[in-house]
Length: 74
Image (cartoon, rainbow, N blue to C red; front, top):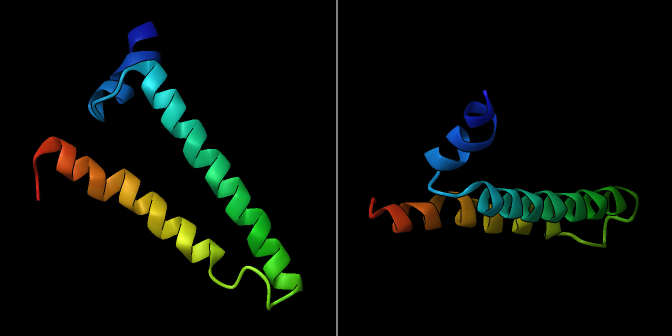
């Protein structure tokens, strides 16, 4: 059970538990920041006009594109 909870998924993406935790916290804080900016943008449309989409593109690159490079694919 310990292995299933703490090791299987991080290993499946090529990370240790601590590397995975660090990455997940980084994604989470970036998404929280983007979410706050999107809420402000909803109230004040001239502010943070591209912050949400910029964050999604940057995180997609980190999660998908860079991982493919690390794994030698695509």
